[in-house]
Length: 417
Image 1: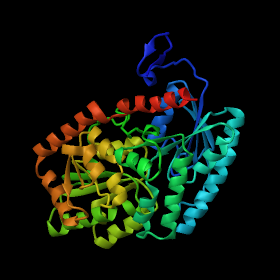
Image 2 (image 1 turned 90 degrees about the vertical axis):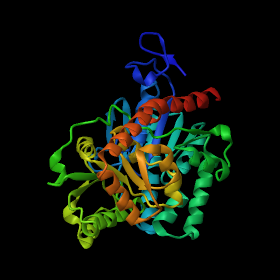
Image 3 (image 1 turned 90 degrees about the horizontal axis):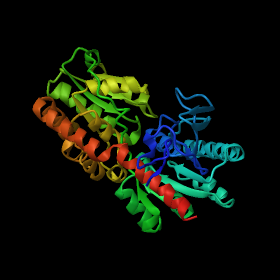
Image 4 (image 1 turned 45 degrees about the vertical axis):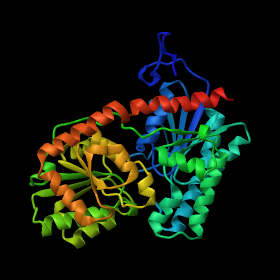
């Protein structure tokens, strides 16, 4: 697709032009689980759409570093609401989602009566935002579902059961797909779910992967102090939750340090989440706390310093149905920084990383530890894998290649009326 840029010429990449001929359509993005612009996929989508001339607004929760209830960044209007808690139990999730829905309705009316919008784009989890989208469909607005997580599988991963609430998750997912005019899938596995389980037509489902922006993920000099006096650093960035497998990583660290005698390796873990304090306590219980740095949620600069210093980066996501079908942003972020990876052998993880990663047997802590040591002890292999991953991101997987696909979804949506 192409649009008219500031000089009157036609450009194929409108997000690269500083001034674009303004369009009249408004897009309201609703995301519940993370604040903007912290949620990188949502922020990349929002700024891409705004640069292409759409009037973009976001409704999201507040969060650490994002306490303002309203601000404008890069021409995107952000409306934030507070949540009572970060849920861990089923009852907690019900309260969190109920409060979020209330504020989403209130703020959607505020946006409609001030800036206006023609489309609501819902970014899950949870799969309850269709209630807002479905309501505004009554007023002629369109509804797009940006499918970030497969919530039935997420529920199973968190609670280890397929009970009544699992069936509720399936029903909410089904209603979301049935409400949507279009669905945006993060990979082919999700696209298949939208068609087979969600009942959408193939032409309604579009794959837009979460490619990293290379202007954000900058290769920087290492910061030796982050190795805490040791020779090597293993890096991780991501959520500290139940299904992220950090407990597997900590057990692998224990094996590396105490059974294999590798006291020359430090572990740097970047990110926050509901299990953050529990995981810190688990590191103490395992006796590895002195070998692990938990940074919590930090600004990009600190995250980049940790990952650029790392000799090996890891993705310890547990092998389960959810993680097997999900694309993890951290993998491509590691690749963009030329880092070799160790992860469990999962379908979408292998698709993303290919030869940039070593793959441990499913949920096998000993093999995960062995793969880390294999890379630590082979600098030439680390170099080859890091270069392969970097070239794959630059030539295929960066946001530069996904942005036109997102814009095409909206061009088709508005063209079809």
